[in-house]
Picture (cartoon, rainbow, N blue to C red):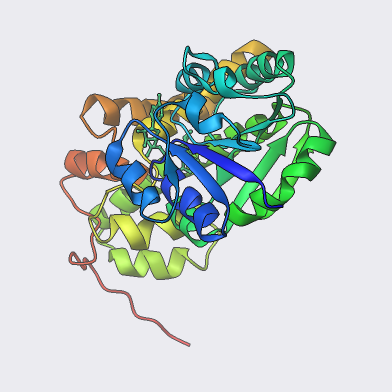
Length: 308
Ligand code: NAD
């Protein structure tokens, strides 16, 4: 018999992930604070719950996709939280990006109630969530992982069991530390390029086949920066939060993070300028203002010539 699933947190990522679970034919309960998001899933056949506890009640697996650790803690352990509605043998899978330390605490509380817990943060953005092609990095008991692999395959394509509970979070925070640094570098480089007279499209073409390229470059330059379209995507608030988790974890472990701290200030400045809900690529707009240029398709600069 197919498993009964609860999905809590129907945001930019959670909505398409939950939609894929519904479309795969699972019996699905959903909960979010935003009624519009819940209505979207109900239209696909999901049952709207009034609380995390109600969503969890009777479900075999509870999936969470929430903004941060404090919210996950409230949703899992709060008065009407998941654990208030859970039963022994149930599994909680947290797809959110949180710290390993937080996850180990949640897993211990769940274990006290006979509930299993996996951290399973994802990578691949909203497009990957919609296509069901996310990379998922899972920490936790190997038997629990094996029991949950089928549902994870509904939302992702590259699924890795990377260690004990919290290991998925550790991998995700170092991945996003690199994303944050790369994005800040792309913003600085392209702003300088336009100021130096280069055509944004030429930079895209040439760096796209050169050693400066990165995911931040390939995903964000054509789809966001050149179009001047900064709706998330991956919000600056979330990128800031992920770098905060990296610096927090690094402090606990005594590891210096020089570049991460500098790059994080770029996102701190963006948040202070009111850009927190915009895509991470919007950090470019701050540098554009300082330099008096714009990195846009419609701003050709000096057009390059392609040979060979
Ligand atoms: P989001 O802010 O778009 O969505 C969060 C959702 O959680 C919202 O619908 C909100 O209403 C809901 N929510 C907040 N508090 C709640 C509560 N107490 N109870 C129930 N629902 C509540 O965030 P997102 O972009 O979907 O990201 C979700 C998680 O995935 C974050 O941890 C983020 O870091 C991570 N992530 C995001 C991306 C991305 O590209 N957006 C990529 C990988 C990982």
